[in-house]
Image 1 (cartoon, rainbow, N blue to C red):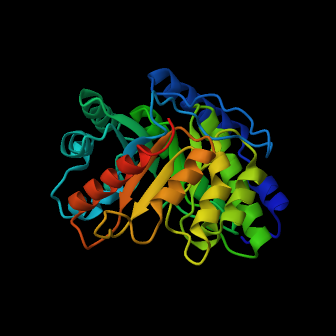
Image 2: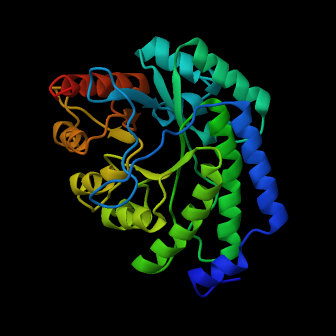
Amino acid sequence: MHVSSTAEAGVRMSAGPRTVGRRRFLAAAIVAAGGSAVADESKNSASGNAGPKKQPAADVPFRISLAEWSLHRTIFAGKLDHLDFPRFARQRFGIEAVEYVNQFFKDKAKDVDYLAELARRAADEGVESLLVMCDGLGRLGDPDGRNRTKAIENHFPWVEAAKRLGCHSIRVNAASDGSFEEQQKLAADGLTRLCEYAGQMKMAVIVENHGGLSSNGKWLAGLVRLVDRPNCGTLPDFGNFHDYDRYLGVEELMPWAKGVSAKSHEFDAAGDEVRTDYRKMLAIVAKSGYRGHVGIEYEGKGLSEEEGILATKKLLERIRGELPA
C-alpha cells in the first residue's frame, strides 16, 4: 500500500491500544532491569532544537572511542569474537569506550543472557558501551506505510538491547525515496515514532550521514529539526558526504551531535589523514561545544585494521593536545 501523504500514513499506521500498551510495558521492564540513561537535553538557543549530548570530560576536549566496524574484516574472518571486542579495544588499543555494530550479533538482540555477558565483559575491562549501530532493518522513511512501520518496529529490540548494554543511543539510517521535501517528511515520521518508543527507556536515536540524502548536511539537519525531539540527534561522520562539502556538513550536524565518527582511510608520512583535514574538522567539533566521544572508524586498506586504528588514535591524540581543554 503506497500512501499518498505523511498525514495519511500517520492515520493508517497508528498503533492500537494493545500494541501501545505492550510497548510501554516492555519499555518499563527494560528500564527497571537497569542500564545507563540518556542525560536530559537542553534546548539549543540558536535553533530551538535539542543540543549536543554533553558528556563530562575532565581535562580534554573530547574522549576517544572505537567503532567496531574498524575491525569488520577481522571479525568476519572469525579472528575476533564479538564478545571479546571490549577487551580487545582496551588491551590492544588502550581505548575505554566502544560503539557496537548490530551486524556482528544480529541474532542476539533478544538474547538477554548474551547481552548480559557482553555487558559484563565490558564492565570487567572498565569499558563504556556508547551505542549500537543498526543496519539492515528496513527504511525508516519508506514511502510504503506498512514497510515504514515494519522498519520502525524492527528497531525496537535494538533499543532494548542497547539499553541492556548500558548504551545511550542506537545509530540508525534515514533512507527514503522521493523529492528532497518528501523524503524529509517520510523519514521524520519514522524517526519521530521510533524516538517516542526509545524515549520511554530514556534512550536516544541518532542518525548518521550514511548515503542517499542523509549525506547532504542541509537535508539531515532539516530532518532533525522536523522531528524536534531531545532524544533525536546526529552522528556526524567525517566521511560519507560524497559530493557534499564534508566540513560544512559536519558543522551543520554538530548542534544535534550525540557522537562523532572520525572516519579514516589513509595517512601520509607525517601521520595526517589524507582525505580529511583532521585539524580543521576537530576545530569545528570543538567550536560547537561538543564534549563527548570521537569514535575511530578506520576503513582503509593500506594499513592493517589494527595499524589503521592505532594511526587514527595517534592523530586524534596529537590534535586533541593542541585544542583548549
